[in-house]
Length: 351
Image (cartoon, rainbow, N blue to C red):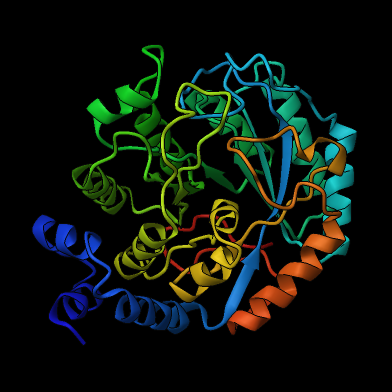
């Protein structure tokens, strides 16, 4: 084993210079993937956890320059799911073996805290052995506490970039990196299993930016770390920027696995979009979660954060069966479980 990978595997850390060296070359990729896979197997074995993604609204009050559902995209066809439609998605998912449901959407003021709480508690009443993960942007600490009291277990909120100057290049002045980070700390304080992460290859991103992201995640110690390649969208200000690469994304999945052996790390849909075998390669590089779509097929094509998103036309059962086969061919197995993080950071456990 090369010295730099041995050090990362043994200590979970490298100097900034060592990180820059490792990130900037493909010289160590094969050994890096192998070592990261061994680390995930030592904690999670070959288990792969599935999360049923329910994209319940593509309205958003924000105008992030990279996002296809940004407020300023007048070409987007908007939709909102009712509570009944969301419950139906969860019921279908439960029959297919899902034990975590992820409610994902834009920052849509239409959904009041009361509505969100009714949806969360409704899912928990119907499926008491399941976890509910929320992912719809920045909220007040009071709102986060209300969702927690209603039964929410986890919250996903990518910080996107930990460098303030880079953040300004990606977001309008109305948004604040400090506010986003404070949301993450509030979520941890309340007791959520917290997820964060960043885009790989986003416009203007430098190696120094990526190292800042890695350092922030070391400070935050999230239960979940979601990274995926930036993929451009034709109806955004960044339409002409090149997308991120699968190679750098996989390299960083492995680095993050060795830095955070107990983290839940997804092989993202964006990885599968940028490479046909991207999700399988993500699993082999250290990921241990996949997030197939349970949203109604009638609206999936409208939740497009980026162009050419995969699986927008598949029924939920088709997605599940397809993933079973893909995961098995990669050498792992999907398990029917909530899939809580195996670390003391987790505050909630199955009842």
